[in-house]
Length: 349
Image (cartoon, rainbow, N blue to C red; front, top):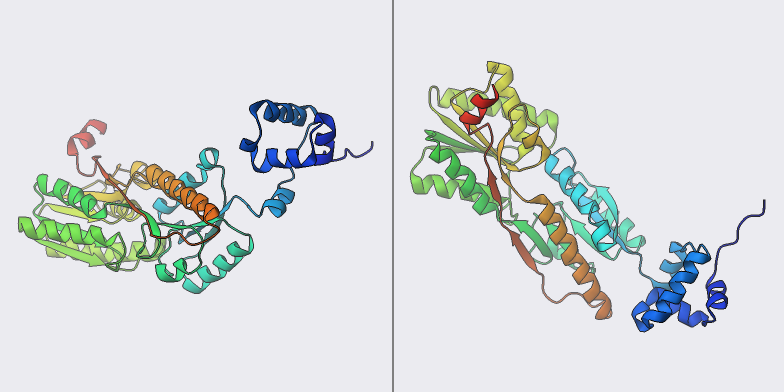
């Protein structure tokens, strides 16, 4: 059987009695044609069984519809959930994504960025903290950051300070006698520092005994070991006291709940725990975890929407850089589950 020939612009022009220039305008600037002529060409494409050659179109227009994404890890469920939501925006915005996992290594990220630029990406979404925003701004492509240092690039962030106040206030209202916060060491320039700051400000204002634990927890093994040590210190410092623990993310909160259940065979009455993210780790934990929801779907959608706006501005201004970074803040939502609401725990027993 003879191989079927690809339908060309010349074939479409011959079928419709339009010029090849008109057919080209249909693909690259359809609004320049009348609705009637657009419909004639669209019908012809269907009857000719036309399949667009994406590579040829990229070469002709210089527009790839590719967006790069750099994400630090998939160990924290927040990042895997965020990536899933970003990828799901394809149906809304029509951009395809090239994703790199950097493990927070700056040199690796620079290598990945050069690879992405070679693929002629039209913009970049970055969640990793490794490369300063000033260096990223010098790439002169549209960039949107999510929850990272953003002095020189546009960003979408959660109001982390408000989220910390919500979490700490919940523990306080449940009459915890001493409060703890567990986090990674975090620079003040990173939005997540607001979780540390909000916790500390609330405890000082209410004059509540409190302590902050800061440990680098990059993977499952390191996290589990550090959380074991922290739990031992908490128990040694506060025997018999009602303890409220605000953990900086749901993955670590889930590990902490598991450690308590393994030790006591249940979630002890004197421990109340709140996480941060509302990732699947909080919903699927052995005891569903109260958490501060970052509204990940909103963060992802707003990030891609802002990037697309900047890509359009970039095209229309003949590739000059966007003048001023845009920063949008998303309000978090407190979600109460079994690790603070003991009535829910009793109902499920």
